Image 1 (spheres, one colour):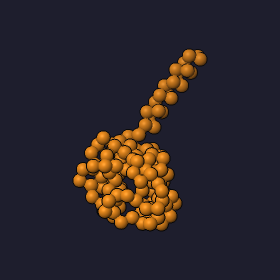
Image 2 (tube, one colour):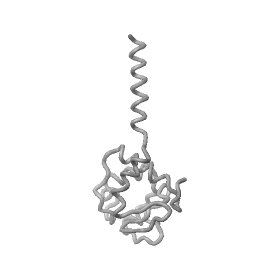
Image 3 (spheres, rainbow, N blue to C red):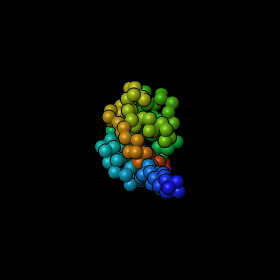
Image 4 (cartoon, helix red, strand yellow):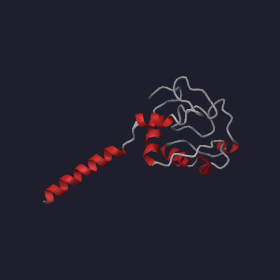
Length: 128
């Protein structure tokens, strides 16, 4: 009986870990709601929002040719997984005065997936 419970517990832990892993394909689907304002990839251009190439490790407010709000330029943020996930929940709450009026992504799994998709692009828009 104890062996069975241990085995069941191990299977549950293993299966739940897989369910929580970031999914790049799901992140790409999630990014479709961002396409109205942002682009990513080799042909990315600034739109209403800046291109998202090279986001991981980039200082906020530094995409060449994009007219950022003073709030964003002076935020002191360097984008990484933690700062992105905090920001994407409620952009206006993290950077009051930002031009980004997006309501946010509050589902942690969706935010994980979206980050997995975004971080794979280098500054030139190629997948690392």
